[in-house]
Image 1 (cartoon, rainbow, N blue to C red):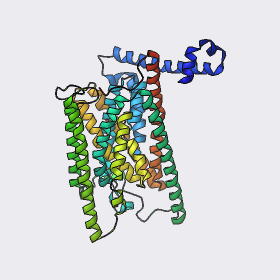
Image 2: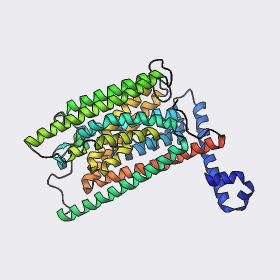
Image 3: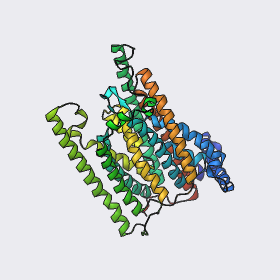
Image 4: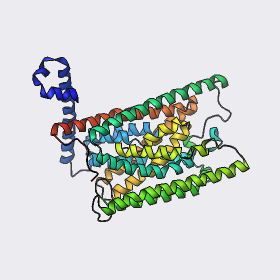
Length: 448
């Protein structure tokens, strides 16, 4: 940006030196992208009588989103960091419409993940479900609170600061996730050398998705903890009611309310005691159950030590804040954090997809109830994401079973994060460049 500023104030030097000419090539590249977006937006307008999904830019965006969803599903990530740039750059949609469609796509993909994971047992983890409901319970309230805080920060921070923070944090997370993947790969290689390359005692590392979907209903019923699901649903309904009454960041709400008025901030602050009460009750309940288990068995308690009780809520709060600031789901941000504290890749992917399901359905229903347009397009893209997630899960699970390498899940997370870093940073740079050229104010703003 500094060199570009010099190029603008020194046009004569720009013609004489090669670096400045290269800068003008970059500027020309941004202008070409803007021209592409303008043309696709004009095409959408000329085809207004037809469904938005019938235009060729939307079809191309749907194909790219199918690929993105199939890759994202393997790591239990929603994929919003890929969907939004694709819909805005390729399909030429505005950010508000792209965010709404992305929430439906994430909902479709996470629904497929949760369906498969609920009906999948893993002999590797003692025949238990891959979803760690305790982590989801203790993390979900703080994640929802963090998203609300992050959305307010998103309105206050300038675009250039959000873009820089996003690039730095996601680049760091991608690096850490890649390192975790290599460590898992090295550990798996050592285990293979010790145990040989034959099949394990049970023949595979877990039940396949096909078997899960073809009628193991009795296993599913035995494995689903209805009480914990009920508590999660209660948390979901409580925050959803606050979101509907308060309205979203675009000023839409179910009741007439003055933006940034007293009622707005009272409803916003209600989320803090909600998250604190739910988290404290869940943590204390888990601690009591742990003491009972220590008395009776004293086994399988390594992940729920008292010293680690607050790790997951704090990580969820951080992931929610960053997700709200950057405009993406928290799944992409909490997955690397879970891997860093030693949670197995299979458990991380299943648990993250379970948490993403609750947050994405809340966002999608909020858009729907507040008068969202292009509902048909949203449902089509959600179905596309649902099918793509099933395909991605099937391929990755077969690869994990065949090669006995759960690190493939970690590498899929790394791929999604790296692509999201490039796309979201480029998209943010385009928006910053447009604001700079138009002379728009680029400092900090009020939240309303």
